[in-house]
Each structure stands twice: as structure tokens, then as C-alpha cells.
Length: 278
Image 1 (spheres, rainbow, N blue to C red):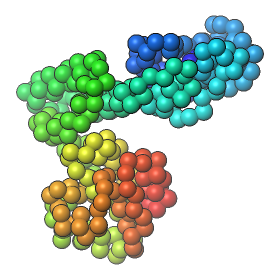
Image 2 (image 1 turned 180 degrees about the vertical axis):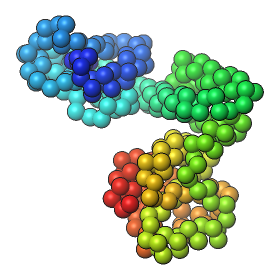
Image 3 (image 1 turned 30 degrees about the vertical axis):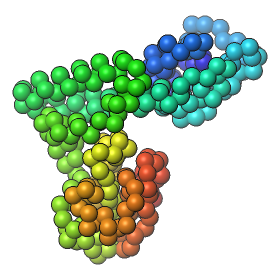
């Protein structure tokens, strides 16, 4: 797979770290190569890359040099891996490398979050944080099986004192519902004020729920006129039963009435619903 790029191209620079991580993740896969070509410093073969726009990313299947496949998907690590697997002559363990990619992305978000609040947590918690992050990084360097175990056990991070403080700082705009009457009051307030209420029904043991949490917090800061709330289905079974929750995460959208329900980890659909109904 070849990425045609330039230093002055914003999208090229933005996707650059993902391409680098892709090469790192697939470095041990036989027969797969990831390359970058700076179009300012090198001559681009117009036979294979006739397009003028960049970044221009194409995959050349083995034995089919004259039939490159242009990449048009989103620029996430997981999507790149799926694209390469789909078009590779010799298939590799897709699930294994998707797990590695997803875990790597979670670590990137954790590192970003840590950077935002560093210096605002006690020294003793900071030491614990460093130990935990180093342990996680060590796991990421192992096999996909280890990464899968790590992914399933991600919920345990919430038990660490340092992460509790990170969550407190990051989720300051998110209401953590503690009782069913409080939940009903939020719905009633949304109806009276005609103000969008977005509720995340989650479980601490649910991997996709853990992945959604930092995004949910980000949206609460981006959409300041929207009320964001979280309901732990294990702690508030009455509210979960009231809403007939069947899977996690489940997102409910309220205003004058229930506007929509989204089941599962669909980031784009959730965000679009927030934007459309705010």
C-alpha cells in the first residue's frame, strides 16, 4: 500500500501517524508492505497515480501491479487494516490485528486524556498512572491474543484512583444518574424546556461502552446546549427496565418526546442525531 503525500497538505499530515502505526502493526505480516512517497521530492508515476488530489492511497495486490485499488474509506487504523485484508492475495488473521488496532486507538485516547489533566492529580496517583500505562504499553507489544485479553479487561481501569480523577475532570458536563426518580425528572425537564437530553445506558464490563465514554464526554463539551446523562444498567435496573434496554450501549434521545433510540457503538449515527436534534 502506497501513500502519496506532501508536507504542506493538511489531510496528509493528519493521516500520517495512522499510516506509520499501520506499518508498525502489520510489520510482521508476510508479503505486506506499507510505503509513503513525498510527491514534492519524488516523481510520481502518473500511470498508477493519475489523480491530482492528495493524499492518494492505493493498494497494489501481488501479481497485479497494473491494477491498483484506490482507498476511499475513512482514515482510521481499523479501516485501513480491513481494506488491506480484503484486497491482499494471502489473507492474515483479520480479527487479531483489528483488536490490536482498536486497543492502540484506545491507548491514544488515554494518553490524550492524561496529557490534558497532567499536573492536576496528586503525585501518588501520578506514579500509579505511569505504572499502569507502562504495563498497558507492554501488553500492546505482545500478540493479538494478549491485546484481546487487555481489551476485555479495560473496565478495570475505572477502579484505579488516578482514572477516577481523570473521569471526574473529563465528565464534568455529564450527569451521572443515581436514582430512577432522578432519571424521570431529567426526561420531564427535557419535555418542559424542549431541550435535547441524550442518555447513555452503559455497563462497566462492556468494552464498546468503555470506548464510547471519552467521546460522550467530548460531545458534552462540544454541544453545550444539550444535556448529557449516563445510566449504569447494573446500578439502576429500574431505569433500564423502564426503557426496555436490551443491549449496551443504548443511547436515548429526548425532547418533547422520545426522538430516537440507537443500540450499539455507532459513533457517526450518535453524533449525527445529537447535531440534528440539538
